[in-house]
Amino acid sequence: MSTMQDSREATMVGRRSDGTLIRRPLSPHLQVYDMLQMTSALSISHRITGVAWVAGVLVMTWWLVAAAAGPSAFDAVQWFLGSFLGILLLMGVTAAAWFHTLAGIRHLAWDAGWGYDIPTVYKTGRAVLIGTAVLTALTWLMLLISW
Image (cartoon, rainbow, N blue to C red; front, side):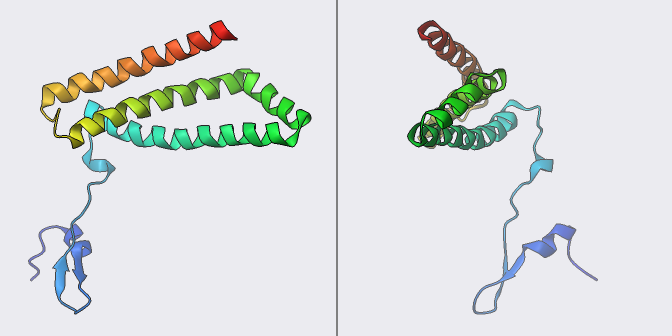
C-alpha cells in the first residue's frame, strides 16, 4: 500500500546527481489564487503589464526604424499611431507603463521589508490603481495640450 497522500507528490520526487532521492517543492499554480482578491489580481496584472511593456518597446522600435528608413515608412507608422486603434494602443501602453512602474515601486518597498501587513497591502494596492488612472490621465492630458 502506498503512503502517498496526494497524487501530486509523485512529481515532487527527484534524484540528486549521486542518485539519492529528494523532494522538490511544488510552486502554486493559478488554481490556488483567488482572482478577485486584490493581492492576486495586482500580482498577475504586474506580470501582464510587463509583457505589455515589451509590446510598447516593439512599437517604439518600429517607429524608430521607420524614421531611419525614410519619409514614406515614417508616414505609414505615423498614420497608424494617429489612428483610433493606434491611439488606443498608445493609451494602453501608457497605462501599462504607469501600473508596472507603480507596482514595481510597491515591490521594492516589500523587498525592503515594509508594507507586509494586510491593511498596508490593500492601501498600497489601491494607491497603485488610483495612481495608474491619475498618471495615465495626466500624461494624456499633457500630450493633448501640447499636440
